[in-house]
Image (tube, rainbow over the protein chains, first blue to last red):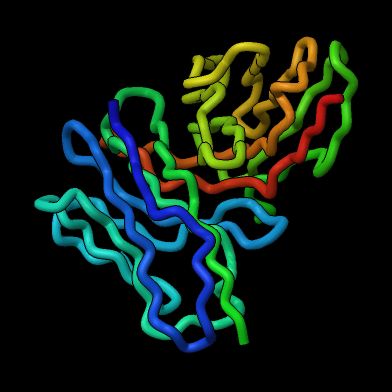
Length: 115
Length: 116
């Protein structure tokens, strides 16, 4: 079945460091790919998305490119801030996958940014 | 717009007790769903609904019931709580557009449930 694998955390960085969180997926068909962020004590918020190969999603300085050839959707940011400390989830969805609209999540990666 | 709201934020139950987790959305979304979040496992789908009067099981439905009498509300019922149901529960909703394409989901703030 479809699955998402993302790098284990925690990832600890100093402010202004470069961030990469790896995400790879296994899916039949052509899934949409998402990054969600969960700040402490809050629900998940959509950070960015890409719906087809070579699409780049971007938001708040974060970027991820849908790479079909490597089945990857790595999250990057050039200069992290303390306020970026959160748990990041990679997820996929088959946009026409019947009734469920099921999101399949990775296990999440905790990012801690130190001043 | 309040978005997706959930109550309560926290709940402690004893084994065997029942309770209902409330979820409401004011965005007129057709699709609503419940997930549970457990350490090291990401989020897993419990039940979902594609519209009022229509519900179906997700990946981990055992021990939970749902109903969808209105577009806005999608409560999750625990029939007889067990320690294995200790988790954080998230409700989510999304549009379904005319082409059948389902869009990104909006999540509520979560309910943290502990079953002793």
